[in-house]
Length: 99
Image (tube, rainbow, N blue to C red; front, top):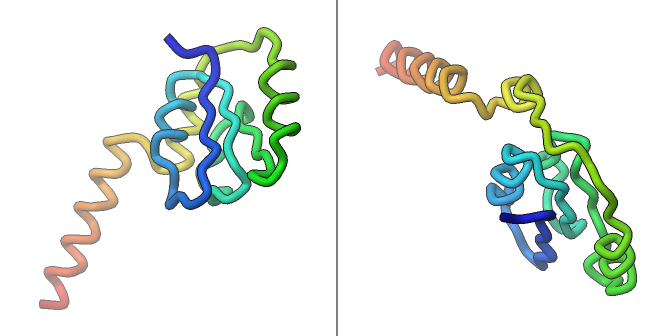
C-alpha cells in the first residue's frame, strides 16, 4: 500500500502511472518536467526537479488527506472506459466514411 506517489522524472510523456495513482486516491508529487495534462485531481503537486529541498519538504510535510476519489474528474478528463470506447468507435466510423 502506498501513502503517496512520487515521480521525480527527468523525461516523461504523459505519466500514465501518475494518472493511475490519482485513480487510487493517492497524493502525487511529480516533477515539473511532466506535462500538466496529467493533473486530474487536486491531489497533484508539481515540484522542481532541480530542488532536492522542495522534494524533502513536500514529503516530510505530508499530512492526512482524504483518499476518496471523485469519479467525475476522470470522466471529464476522458479516462472512463465507456466514454473512451465511444470516442474510438466514432473515430473508426469517421475513418470508414473517408475510405
